[in-house]
Image (cartoon, rainbow, N blue to C red):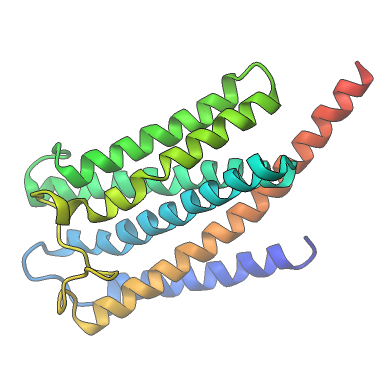
Length: 225
């Protein structure tokens, strides 16, 4: 990968430091929720990056079923792994944020429940691959799970609009509440999202190269008996 990965790492680290400054020193403290609301700048971006990862799983899974090439399967697999990491961070930060605001770590709210279902779907996606009798069948079965499972992503996004929900209203996207964030908060949210996207790109590229090496090693072992 040459100099691309080191450059991504350096740029990502610089963005992360700037992001932490914006979150803890630049944006004002939210009047109602207080300092815990600063988790918002970690929670929302990691959700969005998780959605991006699962979109890559969706597209790559379709491409794999059509072309049956390892490169698409590898992209789907890695996106599923890295997406699970970001979605788990989103759920943990959401729970920490909820405790002082709602008085509990978790409620079976529409938004939270559909997010938990999404998390379980992609746990299942990775388990299908891990326990399939061979890599080819695992790739095919996982591709189907990845395609069908993506249906839950827009459901998660619109859950607070479709059902009564304790979860805050949408702050980004076509159905976002106007005036929901003041300008410095919105700018910090966008910068934080860009920062986590850079981190995702770095992890995706690093893990993809590692996965390719793993597959090459498996093929070599198979040839040697």
